[in-house]
Image (cartoon, rainbow, N blue to C red; front, top):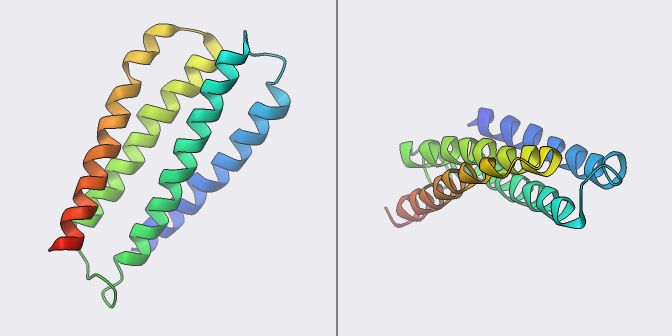
Length: 124
């Protein structure tokens, strides 16, 4: 699963860049500290799940856990979760459009499903 290793690394790199961007370039642009905290949450969840995607790439190695479609699905769900969860929070933090908060739980559910698939794959 070299793709998950590469995807996770790119997402982690973007997490570092977005974290620095939020802390420096956007520091004075947020409407309030509340929106800065939302940005930080987006970065944290992106980073956690980027590292998890890297872990899935490692676990997918035949010698470790065996190639599993469950792990593949988990990786794709984590990626999509980052897009929905972190992506909606990034836009919310910058624009203040609160309706975007309705998208965030979709990403959270995708994270939950992904972690459930990882657990099922580990017990299989």
